[in-house]
Length: 150
Image (tube, rainbow, N blue to C red):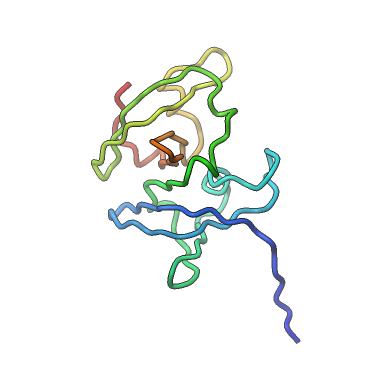
């Protein structure tokens, strides 16, 4: 008797960059219903959740990746972009990660009590912060950002 349960999930293709510089490509598993939004869960919700390992479906099968070793996760903006994220003050920035790569990005800061500076955005409690880069949403680990140029 087969006791395995199949749970319906959505997936999102992503490029994951590790602290070693290695890049992985695979599909991130998402719940069909987001806890905070309508529609499927977003990659940012998974990355900022309580779990320490990220499950992806790669070419060789399922991999579990320690999120402490992830620098960034990039997904297509057309699938991940939320128009509500454009509320607030727009800032064009450049940032440098621990890998010393420089990234040009756009952020929108919409925090309570008139805290709309880049510094306020960076000091949020989330483990991964969303940056708009070209046609992608790049979630970058806050503790892997070395410097930001405003």
